[in-house]
Amino acid sequence: MGANGSYANGSTNTDSGQNYKTVASIGDNIKILEPKRGKDGIKLPEESHTPNRIYATFYKDGHDVKAIAQYGDDGKKLYEIHTIDHKGLGVHYHVWENGRPVEGKVYSLTEDMKKLLDKVRNFGKQDD
Image (cartoon, rainbow, N blue to C red; front, side, top):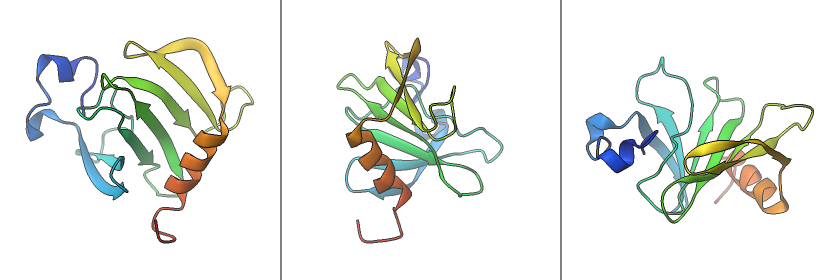
């Protein structure tokens, strides 16, 4: 779980080089993250050590999912779902390319993304 090329330069190869900890898993591929230092923000990593991984974070008070990101074969983020309103879209997603969000590429969720969000929101409330 690195950020801004930290995976590529090897700084996240040890536990001390990582800023996040996995606090729960949904199945084999969805990981719920928290920052290791409680005062840090709840921003998802730009890269993943595991291809095609999905990471999610909750708001600090736990009232809802804050963000969910899907990573590609190369470990780079493909998109990030946000539950806070953005320009009247409500829950939406941002497209990412080459480790960065693509400006202006903000969309309403697809049906598959809605199912993913519901799955993460309902984690712990029912059998997964």
